[in-house]
Length: 294
Length: 294
Image 1 (tube, chains in turn brown, blue):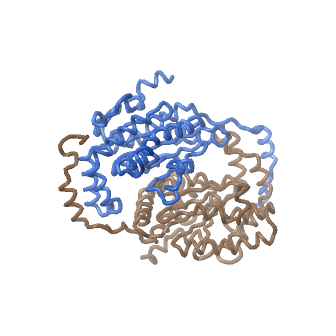
Image 2: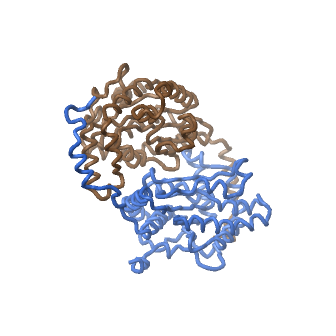
Image 3: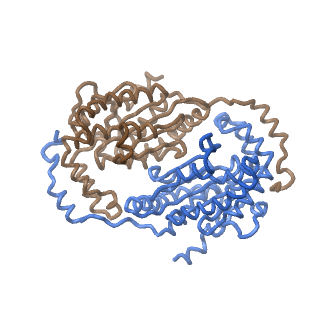
């Protein structure tokens, strides 16, 4: 079954190519493995919702029944690449009860006094949950590298530390999907300008984003190194063309759906005697005499 | 404007009546202040989604801009009353990025070594967030009272402690809505039986729920005392008839919508020079020469 499915798997189309990574080789405005345009894409995303919810509910139910598996979606990308959009349009299709979303900001004073993975460990999803990282430990080898927030040898050490950390999560039942939302600098400029044109978007605009933008090629290089060194079988990277918002949202929904499907989830068996419980309830007369029994 | 609105406010229809509380006086299968049936109700819930999302986004944006306000929805009710259903169908209409949902279980060993509000304090929503408690500190005067998990004088102390705690949250900008999902014991029996008939619902069935059900009238009394003693202007109780799931989901969506509307939220002003930023971006040529600048 999985072989049959693999022909159309989006994961295959978006998986990072092995070897040296050159982001320029990945188009930002293409729509790999998905036919049709915006309108059709938005409809397909809505249509995916119930299936995604069903799979997530099974994962959650299994978690309650002792299954340790869970899923972690890592979202990385330049400013305006659409991490927030994925949260509302794609992640928002799922049951919020089974989600654990963390939006990482600059580390606090206390967090800086610990290893960079200390604050990450505290918020990894528990059994049955879908965890989502809006930014992540990768910031520590992205802005950390570009802005030299740590000595070079410390940055160097982190790639291996990340791989070991993710391996441990995977070994304990976490399916990890890492998505780089890939936009062009021209698209970022359009989006920043759009925020300046629309009073409902002023709050998303931060002049500091334009300063970071000046370091575009340094960030691209930091991403290339990070992707190349941390792309593993247990925690693969996907490069999601993100100039088209509808494609980005749909692609990540499909990656989530595929990953959950491959977990072969089902509803847990009853861990009690079904017939005995039915008899017990049938004999139960609580509230039978009046509406309230109080 | 608020006077005009008050004529149709659902909050008025569902607000706990002042004075001694007798739950039997509240119908569980009625549909106060909402016309039409299930199908229309489900459609109206879907129609409320975009407005709810818009208001929540403004709250979130204001939180980023320094406004300390936030909202806390407390969901309480007997087993099967539909707290999980409200999370997926009503709370799920909002942006998960701005939600902070906590499902409270029996307190851990460590939590029991602290005051009962210790674990609550840690998860109250921050500025801009919509917090949702699936069960809450009220369990400590509900099952706590019925099962005598603490001495009588300690239970007694808690009502005042809850009021003082909620007052402090309100004084710091938290709008608090407390909803009791009110079902009949007959409806609970139907729902428990339904879980036994449907393999996709076995995982929600817990034989212990039938044991708790035997104490229905004691729980009803504990709710009556709790509601009566903790219904305040700053943290009001609403009794939501919940035998009809569509009504329960829609009613809570409307309560949320009304509460957010009354906060008079708007998009924050720009805290930077808009024209200067436009000029800076217009002059920015990053990525102008090629697609990637790397």
